[in-house]
Length: 191
Ligand code: AP5
Ligand code: MG
Image (cartoon, rainbow, N blue to C red; front, side, top):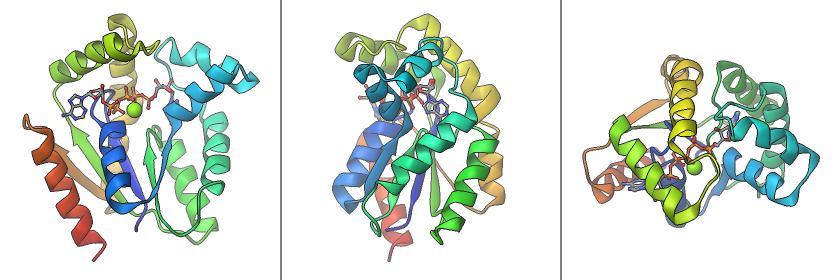
């Protein structure tokens, strides 16, 4: 299985679709958000640093994030492919990922971009706030996360376009339909 970078705004479904892709293709999954929330839960030094940024809707500094990503990647089972969920989020992170994979003679694979309107994103995240109580799922922090996404992460889509990796899927109101399109694309890519 090729590596996959799943890309999109907060609440666009990166985690949800990653779980479905893992269930179908049996690959590895790295969610940098989950890694950081795990560190916070453990009360580690890294968790203490990360908490300040996450609670404020800001990105963890690139250098720190890149070193965590490399360590996590090297702990994944070899040869099955990995879904990167929430990484890269800046051009510097994308360049670092490209270099890290090249050093290991692994391919970058494909990028799946999820496009969802902001009203739907907000409704999903406020609903998750009730169901799961994630600390950064409150209206004020969600708005900051959207702003950070637009200013720092969205410009990366053009970077992936240049790499010939960008494949866009647009929310049309049905999870099954969107998932079907993603699976059809991945089946064809991995034939
Ligand atoms: P992260 O955990 O990655 O959060 P995010 O990007 O804001 O995205 P979410 O996890 O909120 O949404 P998602 O796209 O996974 O959607 P989901 O499937 O859950 O990052 C959190 C923070 O960590 C960042 O703000 C930053 O501080 C830090 N961080 C992480 N990575 C970093 C990096 N690389 N560099 C620097 N800092 C980093 O879906 C959302 C909800 O919608 C769910 O409840 C789901 O059930 C529901 N839902 C309802 N209908 C649908 C549907 N049809 N499709 C999908 N989901 C649906
Ligand atoms: Mg997520």
